[in-house]
Image (spheres, rainbow, N blue to C red):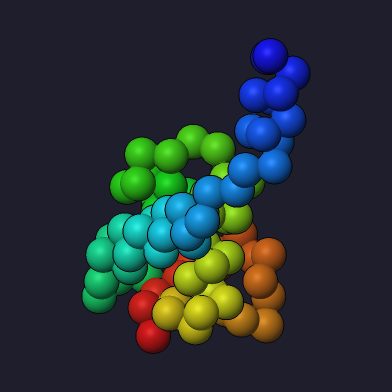
Length: 87
């Protein structure tokens, strides 16, 4: 019986949730960036996050891809002086 339930759960997909979660996270990022230029560390601090890869995957990269924010030094994306601002 448990095997049947496990098989059903493996085939089940949650519709809409991941996209909605990222949308909410990007909105939080945009609120913090309103009128300011902040580094990734400053953004993480204000969002009360500590895991950099998750922050980049869930907040920063989606906002950049959607064109909602921009880098202050786009020619050097890995610069230690890099900051981000709303477009």
